[in-house]
Image (cartoon, rainbow, N blue to C red; front, top):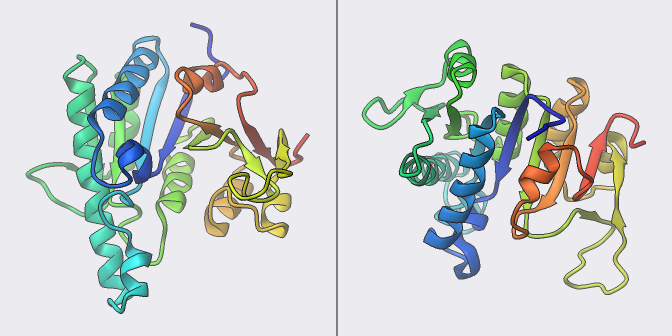
Amino acid sequence: MDFAYKSIMLKLSGEMLAGDGGQGIDQFMLARLAEEVHELSDSGLQISIVIGGGNIFRGLAGAAKGMDRAQADYMGMLATVINSLALQDALEQRGCYTRVMSAIQMHQVTEPYIRRRAVRHLEKGRVVIFGAGTGNPYFSTDTAAALRAAEIGCDIILKATKVDGVYDKDPAKHDDAVRFDRLSYLDVLSRELKVMDSTAISMCMENKLPIMVLDLNVPGNVARAARGEPVGTLVTATGA
């Protein structure tokens, strides 16, 4: 399989693991994702993954209901570790060597995040899943994906969602919503488009790290994006 990139960062929302249920972990979705990642890893692509925790607990939602924001965010970070361990199990059942590295130390179940060790795992052909976000409250898993991708030298972030790209407005609510094939980082920031949060976009802009927003519900889309096919919206410095 010919890839356009050597190393990708796959950013998944926790809701994607929930499937149609909206909460918890859907075993069918987990298995399908593991099959796709395993096939790509077997083909020689270096794969890093950051998963959100919204299918279990979302820090912002907890804060909105009166919880201390920092406390709620730490709970959300632990939810991402649960998702990371679930995906690790699904991958390893398929013979895919995987490491979960956590920004919050929990030696019994994960490795601590150490940049050089993460790079070495990838060089050895292991899939690396980064859990617990950045390890700090007030930062999203979008920002964690951008940070880790920049640190370990990924070539692109694949933002896997439930829609086939970025629109000028919510396509679920507006029939006349227009999808963008390409955007610049400044377009995303100035138009407040829902790609990733502004901290993540700014970090990608500073490090010239492209972002592809794609629909994970279409089987094979991750592989198509890794081959450089236009399967969603590509965000770059120029948007051209």
